[in-house]
Length: 240
Ligand code: ADP
Ligand code: MG
Image (cartoon, rainbow, N blue to C red):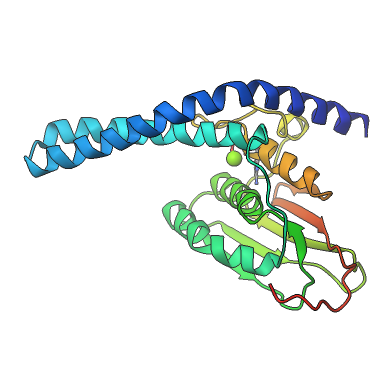
């Protein structure tokens, strides 16, 4: 618990710093990306292939900066979260094309086990999508060619107040020293990583009153996200 409090305090502090800068960066960045895209178009109309290649590289790097700023904004909670009743199943369905696309690029197989009949959770849809996307991406990035990502809704009738989703990978597992630090902002073992993915997940799930559990071995890793179901899992009149 002490560890969790420390972690949450640090996240708050980082969030405040991030809040001050991310917005200031986002506005000019949006303009830069927009004009670069126009330039890209103009160069292609004039068949200036070499110049177009340079602009392509700039756009790809801007995309990375943009992703980083988005993660900052998520951490800093600058965005008002819009809580609505929604079904995890629907949220997962919306992100599956993105997960499958990412998996395809890495030669990873995706298995998705939906489970209908779950009660809805109270959450911001975009933020919850971000959580599932981050966990899915991490799982895919941990594996190479031939790996399998299994996404499973796993609420049970014996645990009515909770909804959970598991992300299983067949990757190498997480060593203890990484396990201890992986939720820290900026901690990454990847050359191109931001180290903000799990911090963002933690922040969002904490705010919803849920949690993230990790189980790992040399055979693979499982991240389980659980969220409270506000009606305690009773038959729900909502069809969202
Ligand atoms: P990033 O993905 O940018 O590195 P994250 O916060 O998402 O940042 O993850 C932090 C670190 O946790 C990763 O760099 C990686 O070492 C480790 N990690 C996260 N998920 C997994 C996983 N499924 N298998 C192995 N390692 C993982
Ligand atoms: Mg990540």
